[in-house]
Image (cartoon, rainbow, N blue to C red; front, side, top):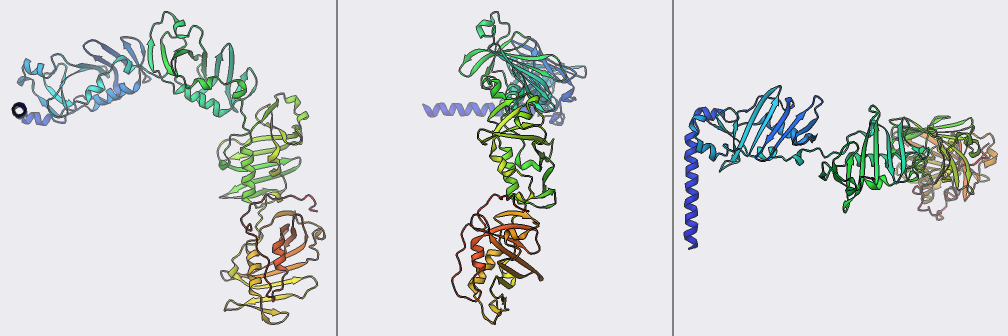
Length: 610
């Protein structure tokens, strides 16, 4: 029984296929073949300013104004979504026939079979004042085509059947689901009213400012995030076009009222938010219109912020990576740090290489500063907070955009906090005072701490002169072995020399103490306890380095300076311990701590420089 049924179905399928093949073959004349690929309408998509979609039970009419905005005119008046209408226009512009069947070879039966006696949809449109229409019938039995006919033309065209879903739109598909259109940067003012209380924020040249119920800088990230959510709000469902009772939707007394003013347009764009329609969905409407719709409620968290929560709690929103210059002024002292390529340098008071880690640490602390409290917003109170004349002034200049300036005043709360003020605002802020340890006008604080930098293999000669001891001089022979040449010739302690040179090759100052001090005796450098001289050959070019070592410094260090340098600095005691050993001795050298060249230390400052 099953075999018989299958056989019958196969015979029927072959019959239909044969009919279509013969029919198509019969209809495919030379002229018709020439029609294949022909563009049906000579027009540009942008020239279409009216579209009418006619279906059995509904006709939708949309028009475009001179500014390119589409609106629905029938069966209701409403803003239209540009996207589906532009898709229709584009398809009409590029619509081509896959083949054509001449009208004289068609009868009423075939027209009916093609679905063109009662078309599924008729699209009427206007381009440059010319009215055109296209009727779309049924899909062809085989292939990816559908039957279509230009109204007033008896020829039937086969077009790609994907045209149908592009045209088959309901009113809800064409209604604009955007709630309110605006660009955040073009706004002058925004108001949020909730439970009778209004927050007003205004955008000026300094960014967003809270003006009601208090005067304060607004957090730009919170404001932009809120506005972005409002701008991106979309209608979920069109609930009621002509509501008789707004209380049904909680819109007689809205939970929130949001009003936006454009810089050019004085009329406010308002959104009213009602009660919950379902979980995470609320009723809403535009101000001045009747229609009620639903939207996702995720934006309401931003609207619920209090004025205090909207305040800007970051000293600056500049990114550390984008800052290319930093300045610190205290009274008549000024220090400027500037980026030169990938490196930092001291630009003022005297140009020098800077310690990148020290500058980066300063910028990181400044850009991460968080406001912990608000003291006042009265300009007349600046002096009482130490923010008047003579206050520390910090300026940060980004690669692009305006520089930002801050004033730093008195400390408070047992020196744990300090008062600061943004130059562009009257607010007096409170921040943690820790950053001040890295904030100085003394160039020593930021100067490069690399004392020596060479390859150990490049050292050809070492000379060590110790107080009350004979000078020792060792040279490296062609066989790379070290030999003592003074005070007497003989074998040198290679292990001791190797450790000394290794220590010195990457020597970094623990702290920069003074620049060009008048009295070296304060550091024991007028009569050094030890002088180390190195003859180095870099790429065939000879050079000499002399390190002077003085008295003991703080925290297990020794004072030192280069003979041709102007900085006095401190170095670790283990370096001095090794340098003081007998170059001819075979004694075991002091171990080199593992932290050498690895640990990053903040530069120290010693006020006893001169």
